[in-house]
Length: 110
Length: 114
Image (cartoon, rainbow over all chains, first blue to last red):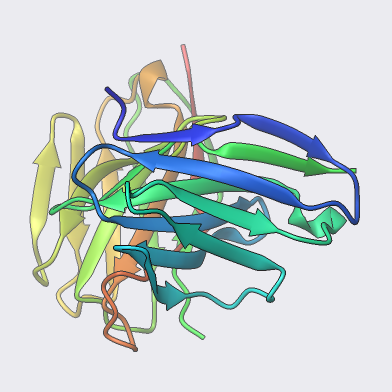
């Protein structure tokens, strides 16, 4: 069973809309991190949640938000989408030796 | 701003050749991780190094962490088409000491041609 499941895999949205992405870590993992990956900026840390509380936050505008539920599933929301939000959004869990990533959600804003 | 610079940015080689990619920073990290990412997928962890001067081997891949813990290299011997992908390095525990907020390089895109 995959360590992290992200849905949906692909999304196309229009500028100004909002979007919600989902991440389900394998059972037992209470920490979830989110990253944005673009060709020009690479992977950039968005935020980390642990037991439903945001523990760390990256340098992204307030349009980017997230939450975590009691079953460890996490969602991230982007409001008022901009063209520059087009990216691969990755969710990861921290293991003892490093991070395990999901396959990501490819968001395209048109 | 902390940066991890990876070089070269792109590399295209023939099957059987050897190669080395580099990950450099002006900052000290407590750990450095290497990942490989295939198109449309998330990065997959290859190795974590934590001790200055440490060398780790994973089959044909050799990873080295610099003595000062500011740089790292990945050497691949006899590259195969299956090695094709984006190789990313990520540093933890940098200037803010936060091991949970990795700093990432932009990656080296490797293509191994049969």
